[in-house]
Amino acid sequence: MTGDKMNLNNLDATTRSHMRAEVESDLATGTLYVSPRLREDAFDDYVNTLLDAVDGGTPESLADAIRSQQLLKESETAVRGGKPHTKRVPVTAADTLAEGEFNRYYARGLCLRAIQEGIAHMRVYRAKAVREPRPESVAMLGSLIDAQALLTDLRVSNGVEPALGLPPGPNSGLSVELPS
Image (cartoon, rainbow, N blue to C red; front, side):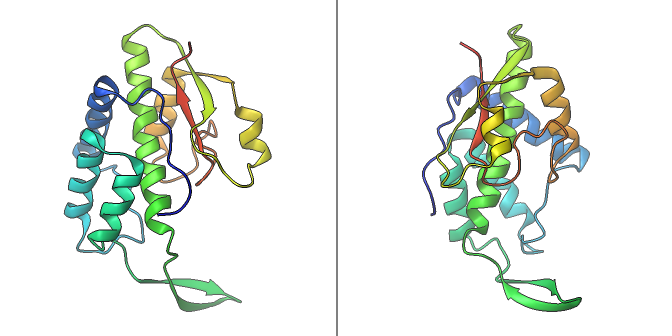
């Protein structure tokens, strides 16, 4: 495993139940993000591993399970100089996938929770230390984002950069929390 642990401030049983509802909704609608690095025969194992992590794990336990179950391909095709070639999948691929997807469902679950509790905004914070924070990430720290708008954005932008820019790309270290 690479890097530090993610510190998801509002990860508790209530948030986890909302996270699970969001994963199940994506499964029911066929919108669950499937990484192109996932082995073709590993979808069901990935879903079970994701649900286990949502129910009681962490981004780190999800990454460890993805690695130990060998759910990712060993190589992938890339284009260099206009020509396709085969390269090894980065050793950090499981961490990047796990952190990104766990954080996305955490944010979605927390937005659902906030809306149900009458909380209109989420606060952006650094959930994981990063070596070189991107300027756009630093600029977002402490800002408030409308919970309903963020939830909608994260639901429609699975696997792509969300319009609101949160999280701002893989490995940003940013997440959201309930404002204090």
